[in-house]
Amino acid sequence: MFKIAICDDEEILIHTLKENLTRYATETGVEFCYQTYTDGSELLAKYQPDLDLIFMDIKMEKLDGLKTAEEIRKMDSTVGLVFLTSLKQYVWKGYEYRAVNYLLKPVKYNVLKMELDRYFARYQGKEEPYFSFANDSGKYKVPYKNLSHAETSRRNVLLYFDGQEQMIYKTMKEVSSLLLQQPQFACCHKSFVVNLSFVKSLEGLELILTTGKRIPISQPKRKEFMVKLTDYWGICYDVAVSDPGYSVNDYRVDLFNGFWHLFL
Image (cartoon, rainbow, N blue to C red; front, side, top):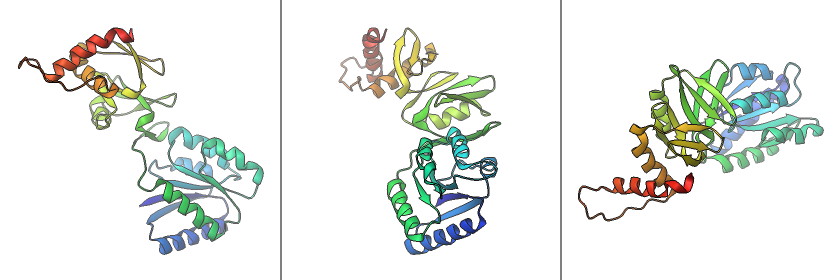
């Protein structure tokens, strides 16, 4: 079921949009639920990171749609944004916040239907996996591909993504159990889980990420991590090994050691 939010300070528009959404659901069989908000600050205060699509007025008295969108994008880079406006000069501004589209008021049903058809055709069944969490700063929905790494911080964990670092009030064991379900993540140290797509190079027992961050590789984790990294980079191959005491994983580690100098 798709979750939709409507944010507009005009009650008449909210009512009309709800009626049109109900009509669309009846005609197409698409299941969705919706929540309504009368200003941007209310939407932010009650924001849920599992939203799929937001219809939002640009010009609202308390907190306008553009400022609201800016704050939403700090928490959620995947939710669809459709701006509602009667002012054409705001259209291009809206695309700065990766808006799906904009609709001019008053929104007619045939226009709304075309927009929803486009949206569902584009995104239905194609949602990328994401990591959701909440802390004192707000609620976040971050695509796994955007998370560079997680790092233990006292009894909690720091998550690094999109140039930000945010605290999550869970243990590394809890966080890593979720991250390591994704094929691009690996544990290089008891205090770090790394997104392998962010690994730029290696220096000794340190990873250099594309963000510039240096992360240690611990001796206990070294062998397992090297196997996963070399597999991810695609430079390891299963081979027949004549020595029965010499496993394929041993070969992979030795192969990695052979390539190690390439990344110094």
